Length: 464
Image (cartoon, rainbow, N blue to C red; front, side, top):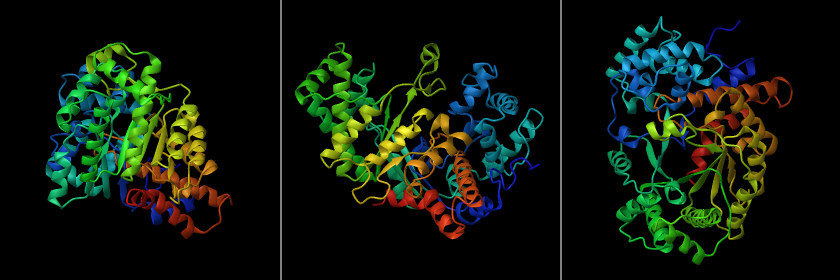
């Protein structure tokens, strides 16, 4: 029987162990998608206790606590930080099989040198030790350095002034922290807050937005501004992606109807979204940005809790809808004009893994290695089975050696252990293939592919 989470955790053969320790373990992290706060990095935030860094904003943990019957007071409510931690300590022993059970103990081990299992019996001691280390030297920047992170791409609204990104760059003593351009608020014309966001865009762009051309010019001005700060990538949450052609004149009328708060038909919404997406993608191509497309979410399913807590609080789920035809038409419309940017596609429904992987293969080329990426296991899929399925699906249908590897997709600075989790699983898969005679026993050659997937490919992809 193997000990729980020892040095060979998830590595079940000698070749996997050798691959991990020799090639993957010490590679830097290129975190090309996350939801970390640049302000906290710039100010080198110091946490008062483990709850602040561990439970604030972590809807992964919140969902488990709710499922265990923890009162909302001790999740997002006015319970004290210590009370919330203790409730998490009561919850985690029952979460066996969930990746958060592993991540919790990996984080305790990596950042706090704690090898105990979190439970009500150990909670008081762990609370004290973690808080002492946080107050002593585990500031945000030190956590990032301890994690061996080389670059961080945050997620930002087009209206953000990016002052903290500029401050980090000006200080010159830290890694690259670059913004990602995420214009969802200006694509989702059907949302109630759409007009409010247009007003914000007017203010920051200093362009009066009276028609569709004005909107696009304002967004272009923000893309140019983001590019000046060092942006390399955009991000779109498309739930679902749509494709319906419309003329510029039609879309202008639709946009003006929205500004006047008039109801829109579904086909009008789809024409507007299609036109904006295409025009934005052409701008990304112009600046040699990559474009991220996230597909497959049903958001804010619990309307009562949405009204109480707002979005991103643990009430989303995997979406179940058809999208391949629209996605193909969107990508093809750009390819025909030679304006398709480098693209990373993520799917939340594991049913669609093969769909995404094979669509990616239709638009490769342009003398760019891994130009169109089938992105890593995302959100509800970033567990052992999900990561293994994503890796093997990509290997089955594409070129695994060009994969950009894992990302954090988190709001917590302790989440970099997800990269270790992924790397261990990658080495386990490839090690088993060697042991079973499915790959040649050329450790150095396979090891170099592992190093590329862990770091080198992403570094190259976003620098060329």
